[in-house]
Amino acid sequence: MIGNVDHVGIVVADLEAALPYYVDVLGLPLVLREEQPETGVRAAYLDAGPIRIQLVQPTRPGPLLTHLEEHGDGLHHVCFGVPDIAATLRRLAPGDDVTVAIGGGGRPVSFLPTRPSGLRIELTEIGSHD
Amino acid sequence: MIGNVDHVGIVVADLEAALPYYVDVLGLPLVLREEQPETGVRAAYLDAGPIRIQLVQPTRPGPLLTHLEEHGDGLHHVCFGVPDIAATLRRLAPGDDVTVAIGGGGRPVSFLPTRPSGLRIELTEIGSHD
Image 1 (spheres, chains in turn red, green):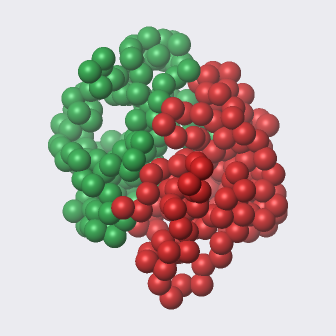
Image 2: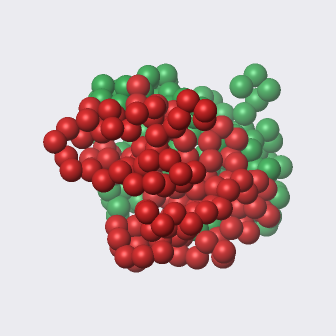
């Protein structure tokens, strides 16, 4: 199978404004905050038990900012952890010119060009140490 | 904290048409299919490692069908498992008139009336046997 769900991504216009509800009201521990210059986002990761919830704010023009401007804050994607992102992309997106960039936790990440049932699927390459 | 993520819900107009990509291409095992008359949906649950992915098709008019008609197929909600749904609703939605119905796996389920960062949050009451 493709791999385990790693996180669910929620796009937000203002990370600082969004965080308190998740941390203080829902009580989800904040485990990581980082700037991701290659993907052009600022992200925070919350421990939601078996997976993480990612709050992600675009920091430059691109598909994520366009999505935010069109739809506002909201649930955006599901990310699967895979052992070999290049191999998974060859299988699931053969012939497509897909960009791989360094994303959350310094891992290679990519979005599939296809959207089954409208679902945006991100892949993140998890090393053997994860 | 609120609880662990139980599943992520993807609303679809046609469950039978949506399933093959998830099962045959992504390789996610289909673990449960059911009609949920109280919530007015037909659902399939896929094993995505630490959580399940739910494909959910509305079977009668209601908020889910309205969402589908307005937005089409797509990622819809995150569901958290909680030990006592009434207690969680008293804490997170005090004073709100929130409906609890029997949903997936025969468990009591409810949606929070608030949508932090646009996120629809469902609760499902997990018993001690889950």
